[in-house]
Image 1 (cartoon, rainbow, N blue to C red):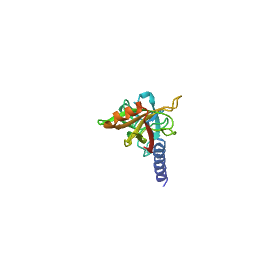
Image 2: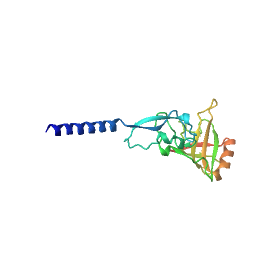
Image 3: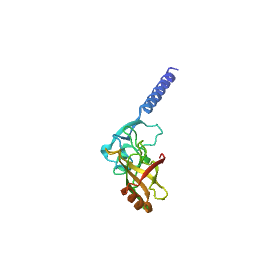
Image 4: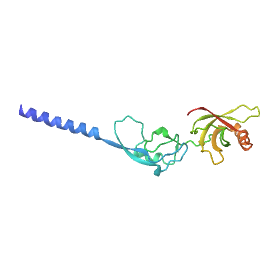
Length: 180
């Protein structure tokens, strides 16, 4: 009986030690050290190692694979302190074939007063009886001292020249229609 009790105590101690190790076991994953905006090239200085429990169920990039994300582009805005997911990075550069990025200069009152975020869907209105053009915001600056905003939009390449010329002629208004 005494031997059985000793064997059970040893088994219990081993199971307890195993459960404790599993509970405190951590793995290094890639975390974001400083904010990065959509389209930014990821550098090692932008990242840091974060220790997480091994059984979180979260989609993460292991720190041992950090070299695989260096030089790629942020496919979304990344905030400091969050972990990097495989979908947070991409190799695709904008614009893709058949697309163009057009820089618009928009005066106050011709764009939403709230900030525009990357991937926001907008309509670019040029007037002169032309239909509005659908576009996606790539970057948007805050208004300058004169109240003008620079807004980079992704459009079909066929629309790029017309929108650029309308911006030069100060015939552009931007309408926010959806959030990305």
